[in-house]
Image (cartoon, rainbow, N blue to C red; front, side, top):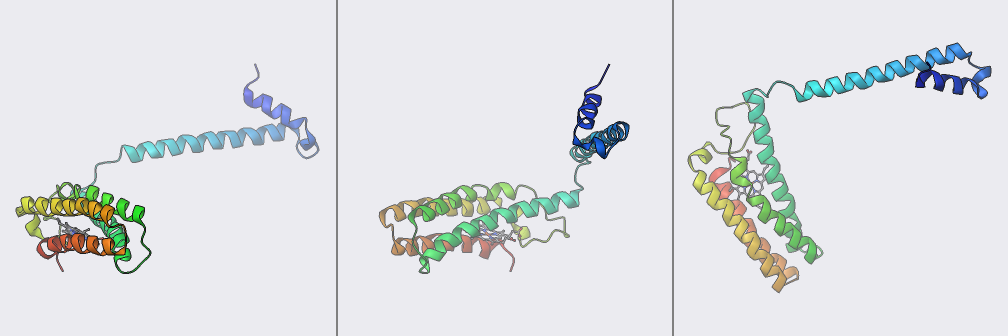
Length: 189
Ligand code: HEC
């Protein structure tokens, strides 16, 4: 019985390439490539399986990952705050961009207490500017996060009423201090 591979080899050797390859050489070459390819696919799926089944992170690695996650939330907050801040400082006003930036700040603010869920104080290797006092003052942290969310929500109404540079200035002056208040209290210099 002919396999699909042999059929392939036969078809290919009847074409123009016949001058350059003998049938058996080409078939052999094709088979080898095929085997190598199958091997590579098998290996890569085995490797990805290995990655999936990898041992859980060490406590130190987990702490570093937790710190990176919360810093990512703040980077995104800063990115969006910068959009409104740029308009407040005289950049071109864009009502839709300002609105979506404020919606994102409102949404991201709800993640702040969550990303501090893991107490990383014990892991001195993790590079963090988070004050150890956060984990003794979780209620205050949550309050400051929700203050930021409330300010970002109110700012959307302000901007809807004043869709211009003045509105952007007002909004930046209302939201920015909510970041600063928490930094003064819980972010190390
Ligand atoms: C409820 C508290 C809180 C609020 C509100 C808050 N921050 Fe922070 N922020 C922190 C803490 C704590 C850190 C340090 C995190 C760390 O290093 O683990 C931080 C870190 C940062 C960082 C550095 C991130 C990094 O890559 O290391 C930036 C930028 C930042 N905040 C911007 C903002 C902006 C902009 C806002 C407001 C839109 C804001 N934050 C609101 C507490 C807060």
